[in-house]
Image (cartoon, rainbow, N blue to C red; front, side):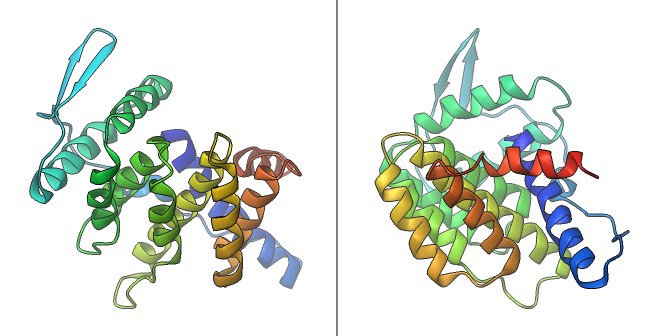
Length: 228
C-alpha cells in the first residue's frame, strides 16, 4: 500500500507537470504535496488483531463505531512505519481477506464520510482493494464517482482525488484475477462518466493495462519519471 500511495502522489505531480509543459512549453516548478503528506500520526497497537509469528487472528469489528476505531488505530500504526513495506502489505492483505462481504459497506462509509481524515479513507480504500472480493468492485466504483464537497480546502480535495485514483487502479487490480469481466465493465462505465482530467488519465491507463495493451499505471509512471 505504501508504495502505491507514493506512486499515485507522484503521478498527480507528473500529470499536471506534463499539461503545463504542453500548454506553456516550460517546466513546472511547483512541488506536489502527495498522498503521503497526510500520514503523520502516532502509533498504537491494534486491539482487533492478535499477531503470533507469521499468523494473524482478526477479531472483526461488529459495529460502525468499532470499525472507525479499528481504521484509526491501524492508520496510526502504519504512519510510523519506515521500513519493510512489503511485510506490511502482506499483513494488510491477510486482514482484508478475512473481512466478509457483508462488512465491506462499513469501509466505504468511512471513505465517503468527509468528516474523517483522508489517511483513514486511504486505508479503508486499500482494504477494499486487497479483499479481492467481487462485491468490493461496485464500492470502489462508488468512490471513484463521488463528488468532493466544495467547502474542503484545495489540499484536501487533491488528497481525496488521489484516493479516487487508488480506487480506479484497484478495480483494474481486481481484474487481473477472476473478476476481469466485471472489472472491465465497471471501468468502461466509469470512462463514460468521469470528466476530471487526472482521474480520466488514470482510468485510461488502467483500462489499457487490464486489456493487455500497456503496462500497469505504476510502471508507466516510473518510466515517465525516469525521463525527467
